[in-house]
Amino acid sequence: MSMTNSHEKSVLVLGAGELGLPVLRAMSQKAQQNTQTKISVLLRSEAAYADSGARKTRLDALEKWGIGVVVGDLQAQSIDELSECFRPFDAVINCSGFVGGPGTQRKITQAVLNAGVARYFPWQFGVDYDVVGKGSGQQVWDEQLEVRALLRAQTATEWVIVSTGMFTSYLFEPSFGVVDEARRTVYGLGSWDYALTLTTPDDIGTLTAEIFFHQPLLRNEIVYIAGDTLTWRALADLMQKRWGGEMTRQLLDNEKLREDVRNNPDDVAAKYRLAFARPDGVAWNKADTFNAQQGIETTTAAQWLTDNYARSEY
Image (cartoon, rainbow, N blue to C red; front, top):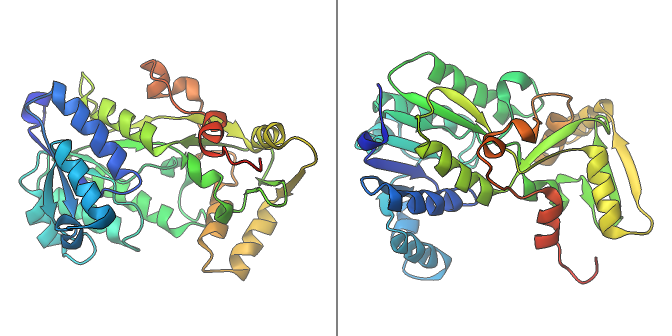
C-alpha cells in the first residue's frame, strides 16, 4: 500500500518505558507540525488507569503531549485480540522490548500483519540481525530474524527497521560486566579491535520520529543510526582518561565468553557479552548513518559519561 503522510492519521506506539517514552515525546512534537497525525500508546490497564505514583505522573505527561491511551496487553492477549486492537491504526511503532518473553515479538508482528496495518516499525532497535545471523549466543536475537522473515514474506504492510546498536547506558551497567568501576577494569570482548555502536534512547526517540515523518517516505528498509561507534580499545582509553591513574585492561576471548555462558546458562549478561564479541553486525560507521546524513547531532559515549557519571568519587 502506498502512503504519504496525509494518510497517516493514527499511530499506535507499543510501550511507554525506556524507549517508548522518548519515542512518544518526539512523535508528539513532530505531530504538532503534522496536525492530521494522532498519536496513541498501548498500556496495560493498571498503567492506563493509574491514580497515583510514577504511573500517574507518566499518564499526566502523556496527556500533556496530546497522546491517547489504548488499553491492551501484549503478553496476555492472543494474536486475534491484538489484531483487533491494532486494526484502527494506520501505523504501529513497537517499543515493547524483550520483556514479553520468547515468541512475543513474533506474535506482535503477526498481529500487525493480520490487522492490515499500513506501516510498521518493529522492535528491532538493536544490532544488524541479518549480518549476525542465527546462533549468536543470544536467543532473543534469533527471534528478531524470524520477525524480519515475516515482514519480508508479505507486501501489504510496509516496514522500517531502525538499527541502533546497544543502548548507551547498558554498556556502562555494572551488570553487563564490561566497565567495572570498583576494580578500575575494562573488559574487551573478543578482540580489542572489535567495535560496537551505541545510541541513547533519547536520540533513538528523536531519530525514529524524524525517520517516520521523512519525505520521501522510507519504505521496506533498514535505517542505521548511531550515537557513537567505538572499539573496545577506544572504550578502555575513554575510561583511562576518565579515571586517571592505574587501571586494568582485560580481554575476554570468545572461548572464555562461551565458557561463561555454558557455566551460567541463565545469565543474560553473559549471553550478551558473547553476542557482542564479534567483528561485524554490531557496529557501523557513524558517518554513514541517517543522523550524520541529516546533520542531526547525537550523544557520544564520552558525552554520555560526562552527563551521567558526575559522581564525586570519579
